[in-house]
Structure formats: C-alpha cells, structure tokens
Length: 163
Length: 427
Image 1: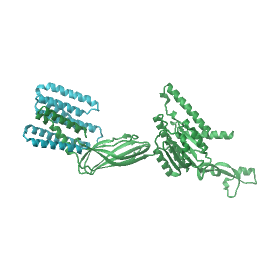
Image 2: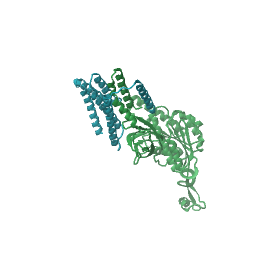
Image 3: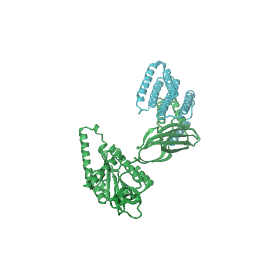
Image 4: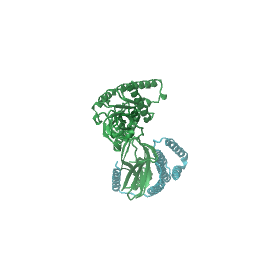
C-alpha cells in the first residue's frame, strides 16, 4: 500500500508540475487553481458519496483545456494529462483495495496493476507525441470509411458490454 | 457498465467536441492518453472465463449455539490469470461476526481461493443458490458480472435447555413403562396401598407391620404403576401486531420452550405430537424417540411470526391428531380473546396446561415515564385477571417472566399446583 501511495503522490506532483511548466508566465494562476483542486479533493474525500478521482480528473482536464486555449506548450500538457490519469487510477485502485480485506495475492495485484498502468500510459504518451509530429492527408472517402468503421466498432463494443 | 469507463469515454468525447468546435486538431490529441487507457483495459479483459464456486458451511469451533463459518471457494479452471472481486451477500436474518463478504483477488490458472467469514444465525432455514463475482481487467476498467452457482443449505434448529423431570398427572396413560404415575397399582416407586398377599408376590413386598397386627393373614405392599403418556404440544406463532421486537422475542422464547419440553418428554419415553398455530398450520402426529424430536425441531426451526388470526379458529383445527385425554401443553402469550377456544379445548376433555411467556416482563420499567409505567401496570393487571379466568376453567397456567429460566419457573409452578391439589383433596 505504501508503494501505491508513493506512486500516487509522485504522479500527482508531476501532473501539477507539468501544468505549471506549460505556461511559466501564468504560474501563479495555475498554482492557485491546483491548490483549489487539492482543497476540493480534501473536502470531498470526507464525503464518500462523491467519486473523488473522477471529480479531480475533470477539474484537471478543464485546467488543461483553458491552459491550451491560452497558448500553453502542448508537450507539457500531454505529459500532465498522462500523469493525472495515472493519479486518478491509483486513487481509485486504493479506494477499491481499502473497501475490501487484503490477502496474500494483494501484493501481486498491486505490482501487476502498477506495471500494466505504466506500460499503458507510456504507450498512450508515445502515441500522443507521434500524433503531434506526424501529419498526413487522407481523401474524404477514406476518412468517411474510417468514421463509419469507428462508429460501428463502438457499437459492437458496447453491445458486447451488454449495455 | 463500469462508471470509470463511462466517465473516461465521456471526458474524451468532450475533448473531441471542444476540439471540433474550436477547430483545433491539437486539442484532440489530449484525449489520446485517456482513450489508450480505456482501450487497453478492454483489450486486457479476459474473454474465456472458467470459474467454479463451492460453498461449505460448518459450525464454528468452540462457540455457542448459532455461530457458523462459511467457506466460499473459487477455482480458476481457465488458462488466464483473473482479477476478481467476490461479493457474497448476507440474508437479513444473518449477522456477520467475523471476516468480510467482499474480497479483491488475483487468481492464477489452476489456483483456488477460499473466502472465509463467520456469521451468527439463531434459528431457521437458509438456502444459498449462487454467488456474485466480478471479473475485470488489471486496470478495473471493463468489468463482467458473473453469477456462479454455489449451492448450500443451512437449517438451524432451536436451542434446547435441559429441563428437570416435569411431574404430570394425566387421567390416562399408555400401558408402556415410563415415569408418569398411572393411577394404577403396579411396579413403581411410589406407595399405592396394601392388599392381601397373592401367590407369586415377592417376599420383599410383604408389609410386616400389617402382618404383625393381623397374625393370621399376609399382606403385600402395592406401588403406583409408572407409564408413559400422550403429550400434545401447541405453539402459538401468531403475531398480534403490537410491537414487532417484543413479539419476536416472545416467539423465540416460546419456540425454545417447546423444543425443551419436547426434548424432556421424548427423553422420558412419552409419545409427543406438535401443532404449530400461525398463519398456516403445521402438525406432527404423535411419535416417539429421537426421530420425532428431530422432526419437531426441524418444524420449529421454520416457524415465522405470522399475522393475527383468532384462536377461535381452533374449533376447526384437527385436534384429533392428539389422542383422547392426551396432556395438552399450550405455549402462548395469552390473549383475552382466546378464552372461548380454551373453553372448547377443555370441553373436548383434554387436560390443558398453558405456559405463557409474559410480554409485560420484557419491558424494562426503569426506562418508562409515569404514564407508560401506569400503562404497563394496567396491562399487567389485565393479564393477571385473564389468566385467573383460565385457572377457573381448570387450565394449569404457568406464567413465565421470560428473564427467569424456564426450568425454575416450571418447577416452582408445578410445585404450587401440587400443593393446591393436596389442599383441595384434604378439604
């Protein structure tokens, strides 16, 4: 559990740092915003009816969008988003573990969770950076085909989830 | 659908929409890490799940009546390691005493895991049919809810207190050796009388004092024959719709009393029948031995408090399941409306004993205010008067303040009956 907590704090700090570094000129505004998120987080944490990681992540995304529209560096924002998702996931995972009793497989479960999370987010980070630098043009029909295929894939996916 | 998955998809969709409205493709890139995270969860979720569940219930060692341990074992018979959440459920009548009903675990292929918890369940029957298991990916994004069959049944019979011998004096007995005085001369332990010697009488039975007074005659002592008898136990399981808590407590005490009475009477070799009078009728024909005791306890285990039905319905009841002149023992918190039914029972010729758990005794008078205290006193008086009218009918009434042990209440009441009888016979 200590390991999880360390990773959570680490990712959280990294997410905050990325947001501040994305627009160094307006660091004071973002610091205030981040502190207010932490404040909300502390208050909400006492009321178990709210999903704290979800609300925290939503606030972070709002800050990222505002920051982006204000002309911040997108590289830092992507890294911050990745770290924020990791923080949210780890808080959620900790809540899930705390609500149930632990057993001998818990340690194995934590290790596997962190491993899969790191791989996934590194992959997500790489794809995002790839999308940032790679640009190519596609004919309209191909885009239409890809859109229809995408929508149909979503439909199949949700159907398999018994929605 | 998992909340986490819904939330992340909605967040990514919102980013795309903002990117579209602001005509800024780079903003959509910010949604990519979230989408990768979601899709990796979906891709990593297991497709072929082969799980088996088994449930075992056993009595908790070194514990009192009603404590049980449940082992719910899950076997992973598939080829992939599974992230599982077991979520077992409690029945309303159960109380969890130790352990947890939910558990997160990682189950490798061929591995098994046993979730153990302890619970308290005093009386009744429970049937488990399945258990709820959630299988998810390592990131807990995509969850599949499974209902696995895990059958188990548990019937908890009511607790029994060992009672001392209850001296009954029924008019009729069955001609089999027992320990109830049969009002007949025979081979017993209590002195019955003296008669003239008959050939075959044992010499140790000669009454030497009488012979000394009448030297030319021989006299033998006679003893009271001890036999078994027919006993009918009636349990009143009606709800009077007053106070659920008090009524439940009264019912539990009544069930405990019937179980203990059945135990002692059957142990002494008597023939015992049972009639449970609730919303539906349960009756057991008279029988002997441990088998009959098990049947009685099983039926008592299933008794539930039922809405009010007048005891006047007794006239329609199959009373002939009890043999004529069988000793009837009714266990019921007496209600004044039931008086005609008791009259009818007496008219059938059954010797009747009422063991009545006292509802007024449950209420702790120290917590009552002045008005409630008066109400409680009035209820107590009303009850005393009602019970008195039953006594006048020839019903032996045992008023049972339920804080007192049944054994001592029964013994002292029966002693009082005997004293009253001897005073009556002397006068």
